[in-house]
Length: 211
Ligand code: ATP
Ligand code: MG
Image (cartoon, rainbow, N blue to C red; front, side, top):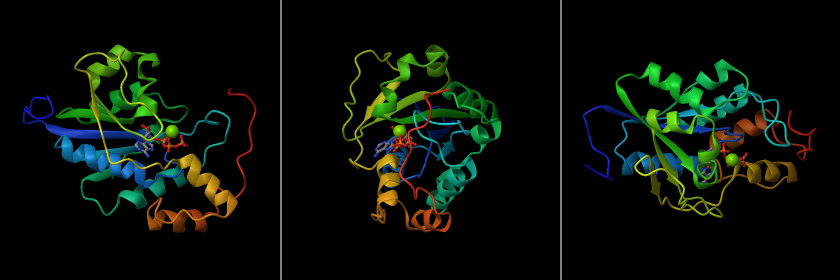
């Protein structure tokens, strides 16, 4: 037993879903810390499919977000990237991500890693009950977001404090648009990829209301 979870000798697979537009060191630290704390064999990063927009902004092409995630994780033998949400297409629902990963990894226990901001929404997600049956949920601290949520089901969620990094993709995009550096907020290869593809150059324009 560790962290309240029984070890059944099964492969332990962490799942880090996100838009990763761009992937940054906050994502990587969260995945690394949870992998160590929960003795995970692997963490698979799963960039979301291509929504027409996220909230009120357009999202970078899935292939760019996928490649940045590959660049950021390539040197870590415990990290991998999955295309399942990208290849399914359309808006990503976590229930589909977990169902597909479950089918592909019948031998593994799944641990879904999520920041405090996303965790707060879990209970409002569709199919919340099935979600908790497919994976153990791990909520990690994120500066600016309270971690504790009294409404979470017992046993289905672990709350973990990770070294706080006040980095967000939104801030990275805004920095690039302003001409400010993102060195050391994202991996070096990601800075170079952003420059090569001229991503985030123009300020985010509010788009039509969500459709
Ligand atoms: P955006 O600003 O575009 O929403 P983001 O920085 O929140 O981007 P996402 O791709 O939305 O990044 O997040 C993927 C997952 O990583 C979510 O569960 C989110 O809560 C978590 N996460 C993002 N940044 C951090 C951070 N600095 N520390 C801990 N968890 C984080
Ligand atoms: Mg986010």
